[in-house]
Amino acid sequence: MKSELEIEFFINVSPVILFPRLSTAGGLVEWFADDIRVNEDVFTFIWDGVEYPARILHQKKNRYIRFKWLDDQDNQSYFEFKILEDDLTGDVTLLVTDFAEEEEKSDVSFLWEKQVDNLKNALGVT
Image: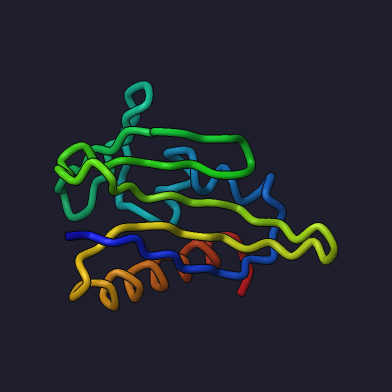
């Protein structure tokens, strides 16, 4: 059974700049997938020629976006990008939520770390 996995990444960039990289095909293709096709609320992510469709479940501009893989039979699982901004310091954190089998959690975390490194490079931040 899959369980929730949350990983926080400090990304010192405005939510207005970050959110399009998380919620548009052009932004996501810069760091997340080889290619992406969009048909209304379904994003088809393409890696190595293989297609993985996901539906947008919820989103709030400059705050978060949640996707659900269409081929995932687990009704509770999704993946989400949430932008957290500290009111006092203005620090911006990206919170990635995903679901994985217990024995796959470290691999999934590692994969997200690599992907978010790509995002930081695309944004020009470290």
